[in-house]
Length: 392
Image (cartoon, rainbow, N blue to C red; front, side):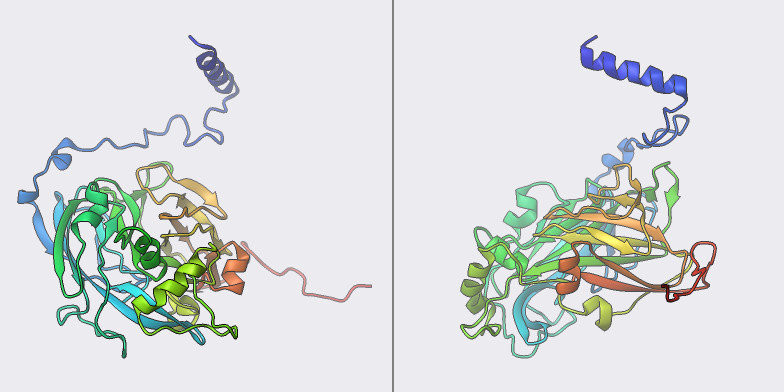
C-alpha cells in the first residue's frame, strides 16, 4: 500500500469511528449508489427501430413541450432550424446584425433524452416552411453557415457536415450519448467562428436523463416550469464622434466588429439577445411551491449565475446531469462555451432577480432577468420585526 492510499484509508477509519462519514462528503453512507448504470438494451437500440417524432421548437426563454422521463425506448426526434441574418436594436440606438437560429437570439432549445437521435434539417436563410419572416430591410443571407453541437460526437460536432451557403439546406442525424445542457453554435472556420458566435449564432440543446433529473440523494426531481437564460456578449464598434456605428449588412459589419473583439472586452452583455428582453419584454412567472428549472449557457464568455432571494437548491455547475448535483449554492459557474442548470422551489412571493453576479455585467450592462412569483408570504421565513426608525 502506498503512502497516499494509506493516508486516505486512515482518514476513512477516523471518520467512521467519529460517525462523520456522511458529513459534508456527499450523501449519507447508507444512501444507495447515485450512479445508474446504462441499460445495454437502450444503449444498443437500433436507429432503424426508433419511433420518429417531430418536435416544434419555440423561442427562448421557453422550452418546447416534452416529457421529463422517457417513455419507452429511444426515439428519433426531428427538428428544423433556419438561419437568419437580421438587424436588431439590442439597446437604445445600438444596432447589431445578428446571426440567428430560427430568427431568435439565443437559438431555440430542443429537448431530447439520452440515447435519442436528433435529426436536424438546417436551412441557410428564411424559407416559407420556417414559419417566420426576416426583419424588414435585412434581405437574404450573405454568408456560409453551419452548426456545431457540443452534445454530439464526431465531425467537429456536426460542423463539418452542415456547411451550407445561402439558399441551401442539409440534414444531419446524430445520437445524444451524454445527458446535460449543451451549447450549439455556428462554426464556419477561422475568425468566422467567434464572429458568428458573438453576433448571436448560438443556443443550447437539453438532453435529459432517461429516468429524469435526480437530486444528490438519488430522489426524482420534477420541475413545474423551465426557463432558458442565453447570455450574449456583443462587441459593437463606434464612430469617430463616439456614437454607435450602424452597418449595412452582416458582412459589412464584420471588419469593424473584429477590431472591437480583439480587445476581448464586450460593449454589451444581455440575456435573450437584447437589453430588457427578460426584464420588460417577456414576463417570467411562477407560483409559490413551484419548482423551476433554470438553464443557462454562454457560448463565448464566462458567467456566474445567482438568484437574488433564493438559491440553487440543486445545481449542476457544468450542466451535466450524470454528475451528482451540488446542494444549496448561492452562485455557480458557467464556463465559456458551457452551461449550468439549477432548480429552485419558490417559497416566497415577489420579484426575484436571476443575474450574472458579476454585478457590473448585470446592472451596468444587462445580464439579468426578473421572475415574478405569486403566492402567500411566510413570516416564518422572513419578517420585518421592527420598522426603520431614527436613532441618535
